[in-house]
Length: 198
Image (cartoon, rainbow, N blue to C red; front, side, top):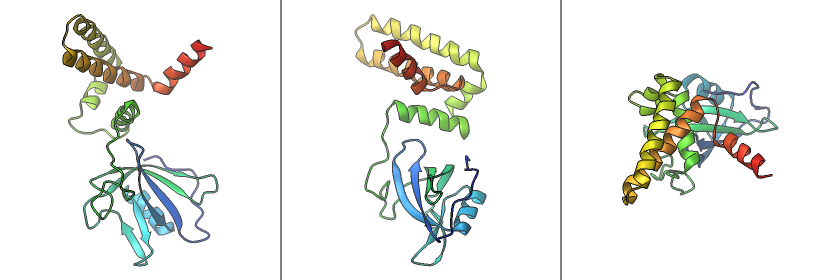
């Protein structure tokens, strides 16, 4: 869990805590924290708020089982608003919706894939192909990129769009794993491309 060096400014009492999905980057909900909620969140790794209606601490998911597992905590410039990035365990809203704002939380693009890979690096999961591949080392990751590139070239010469697109997806995935394994991301590559365009 990534945490800020400074503590939030609780001098005025409760402060807002915005919860964002650490992978999709969608906003999930808004709650309020006091110092006790902040400390419990740090201790348990599960998002805990101060319930204004019940005047007590409330760990999100304690009754539903839909916990929010913290991956990072950030403070705004005045240290009086908290940005919580978390992995939701099920729907977040009490209505059963994925978010409290009625949005779906299944946005999948290259950023989603890249964030998923980063999340696997930070929070390894048993049975994860990404974690198994990374455990084998950079040479194996690079080898897989080469294999997938060759398979894509082969499929490009045939007339099977499904196989071609599947190989393209495999190459893209392994390419992103290789970037992450080397400590880089797509933004780094885009910067190089922009510099070449000048």
